[in-house]
Image (cartoon, rainbow, N blue to C red; front, side, top):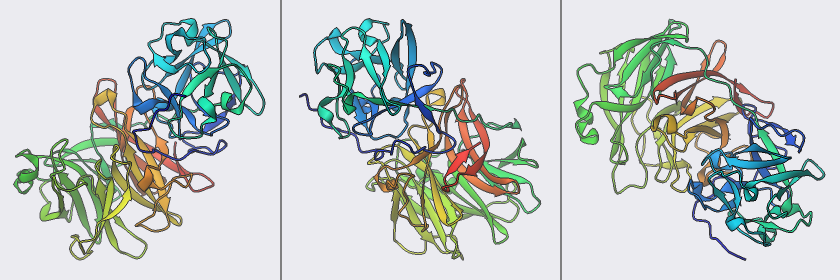
Length: 472
């Protein structure tokens, strides 16, 4: 046996095989040999372990090993069946673009299974053979052996091999088809935005704040047509320059209308640094130039293991104020605020989400029914069309947590149920917020077009019978 020790943190615990992640990204029923859709993406769930076929450590290089891992529906766990003719298929990774390959064209039991550039070679081709209960076997064309989880492992990072077809549960796979997400809803006018946050004004119109020099603003009367409304600080924001290296670019504003005033929390930092500050400004109108700096709320320094960016104000059902924030490092944090000042009430810092240092940011907490839902963005932002941002969620009966995903995995242990991910020409949707409007709950976010530009995304947010959100 060739042992490999996992080096990445757990992303999620194994899903039960019959449970959908959300109605926005649902199971379409297990595929059989006759029903494979070559235009769709699948996750391959092993019958023995309940874990899925995964590209180890998110690799993109030739020769990277394939393993099983707890399901999280990342692109490295998604596979497209490419027809090779004669009843054989290649399995192409959505993450790397490479295909499942028997290393060295081996015909031996226990040979390594890797990813490799698609050559349409026989050691990259598999025949799909139906078994019972909606499972299939994948038989390699070159060796005639079955794709299996080596030695019946049930562990994350258990290696994938080929072996003589014995019909074991470790050689059987459920092909779970993933149904595409909806495209962003129709918007017009000035729709370039990054890290958007929207509040509704007393007159029924909408005010949007987003990342830009001195905090950029937009307005709309109908949530469809948007126009530029200037910046919050037309005279600059010199009080933030110690965190921005003199730049006026400010990040990720969170804007809330409460008690007759607009409260805007926003971040000052530079890319890749955790020497960051979250500031508060207030206004009675929300208009450009009307904002008053109320000063620093919380800061992080290079000696800290957290980052003071991406703030979000949440008022709980008891009228208490909280600020959740954070990115990378040790994850998402929360502090309590004094409603009288909008500043910190005490020195306690709570941890409410994290991925062992993996990419998670842009928290937003929204109360629905008897739960608080913590939305976050996993993976990589700010890379244009190469961005891999995706929106995840967990929930708790308490605003301070613990938050768990649909399968009961704690968000502090990497848990999260996927709500929206890239598809087609919609890349890296994320940095989300939710607004309760007259026609239901509305999800705002940014996404990247093929040309790398960031756009405003708006969709409706529904709730399934178990109380989990989906996008439509």
